[in-house]
Image (tube, rainbow, N blue to C red; front, side):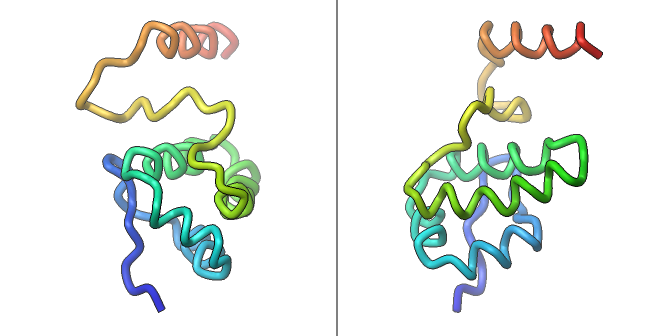
Length: 103
């Protein structure tokens, strides 16, 4: 049994529900342990940044399935905007500005 699962660079804790489904899926767990801390960070940010609880729950269920398929990063995700080690790219700034205008 795995006592401590590796996390991301900024998002350093795994949601308990995600940890449970990840430990139940050996292929997903192997991919999780094999990807970089930045890639794990992207998954955790993607899950935790969902505004609605239902979306967050769906992502927690979906992530291990996609990891088991060998996906290293979440699809259609602009990336973690919480990283302080680099500036937000112009393309991500554009996406974020579009989201603000829709609100």
